[in-house]
Image (cartoon, rainbow, N blue to C red; front, side, top):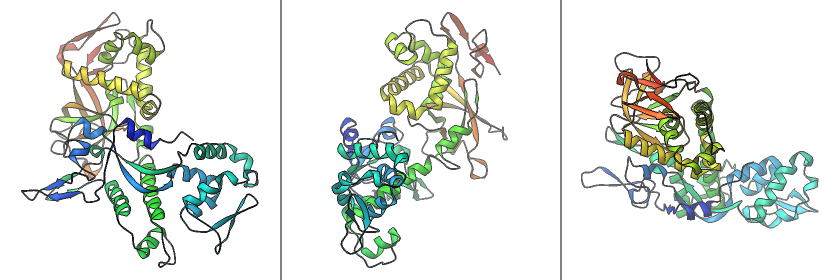
Length: 430
């Protein structure tokens, strides 16, 4: 199991602001929806729409009570099903000779009970103990450093889940309703009847603690993101099915009205490959960055750079977790090169369809670790409501010298970066 994010540290390092208001919008002067200043779409907290800040600025919700981190709860579930029953107050337990034993009449439950007894459990009596040693060791470590107990929860950047107005209606990603439910639970008492319904309890009149309902909503948010990373439309599946041809990144496109016309949001890892010659050109000037990235301060072949960039594209989330500074530096280089060289991309629908099979776009760097591009819906409307695979190709007028080879963009025509295994290492006409 990977280390869980230290939420308190993350908030401090990224100067995250608190979201406090479950109300998302107010009515403006012209009867248009305006995000509340302390809400989930706040311009004050997350920045204006269509900005880099809005795509990267995190916030947090103060839970007002201590719960178990949902990642840890999933891990505890693999050790013993009793833990989830205790945390979600499904069954009361007592500790008898180092073992958890159900006791509906005199037992205890809740995160506070877990915190009290975790060091007193005789783990050797857990079923299948030998196969669970590593999980138990990790759980004990998380208990000692207290990182398994949380009283805040992170809110992802508004630009990732932003709202839009369509036919006079406000629409947004469903994750915002989950955040809203959590915010409401931190401010207001949920009726026992409704809380029991949400928790799937048969007795709708039994008392439900605020801690339990907040734990439930945080669990729901965690499950939402796990499901988004898997399944038919998930990011993991997207990463697995994507095909690659040289530096042309094959991606899934979505029609998004908030994307500026003639622009496209493209994952940073894809742009790293698309604009490889310009990135390499800058890396070669920075010996410290070159050594950190390639492990060498000497000659690095273009083929080696090619393999490295393709690895980064396939493993963007790993790079983000293990070396966020390196990611930020590469994004900084991309942003600088796009601006200096006026780089553009051609988004080509595959298969070609009608007269609108390709668009020339200004690239907007998507700093998330995703495998999709966003296009303005005025220019792009997926057939049958489904996103289609698209190929991004580089467009550039001029030439660039790289590692002693003159890279030409022939006849200033549309082109894509050719195979770096070719002898001539050049751009060529399609």
